[in-house]
Length: 363
Image 1 (cartoon, helix red, strand yellow):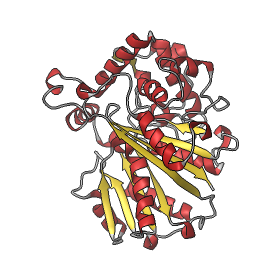
Image 2 (cartoon, helix red, strand yellow):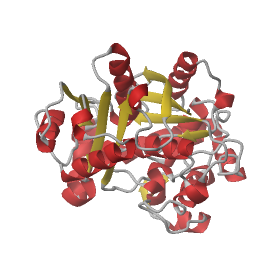
Image 3 (cartoon, helix red, strand yellow):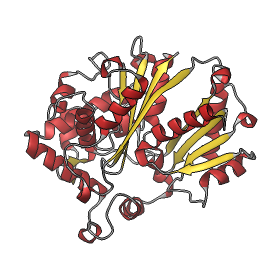
Image 4 (cartoon, rainbow, N blue to C red):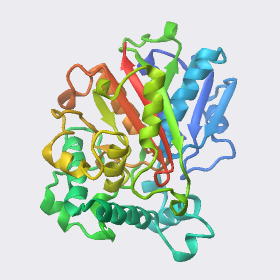
């Protein structure tokens, strides 16, 4: 709760607003701190009584869901300022085994069809990686290219969890977790979180920062459990982006920076291709050739992504949203993309199950 409070107060100060301006609070329930209604408990902790306090479930797609819900609340007149906060501390609170077991028990592992065989979440992503490698003749270098790309970006971010340089030798020397996924194909377990303020146009810009407008959101759901997925190598990220672009009346070519959910390196490969940023089976080559670097044709995960910036449990994905805003404000320092005017933030829940895409634009 103290971390939630710190993030909330920082976000409100950034927006030039006060706690008494908050009409609604939206939170995700952290695994490391359980409450019956987390948002109500958080409002109580802050000492405020907003008309609305909701705790949502959306997995990694939650940032897009929560911002879009806040936008609709403001447009509908039920709120003027919505405070969105998500934080988790799995690194400090849980042991390694407890965290792995929690992911398996309450995560995307089917209790009857999958759990009797003892899969872990990494092993299920490993199955996707094997299917991808078989279908597209991909190999370890395609996975490694993603990990190296993210680490290079993370070295330029002062708040990244993983900042030591990585090359293909370092990647290949990391031990196997769930064949073919190595340690450096997996996100680190991190403590952290984020808070954002979504407010009405007349209240925007009070903190002196450049206002950022949410111009479109799109979502898709194809399954929850991998055993029910219609495909191992093609999922719903692209459909979510199509819906967001249609709402915003924009095209893929308008995207200046893409923030893609990448809890494992294979997730980045599949999602980048599903989003239409690379042909099927060709994302690894695009990463190796530098197409998605800061100076490439489409900068992706300029902060290091989940793989290197960090994976703070239930708050995973919010780093993408924060980086999108930072880039649009021109505050990214040595990783700044010149003249960034529109960003795409993608989030994924479960094993490619749910997808949320948010399009943001600088005003």
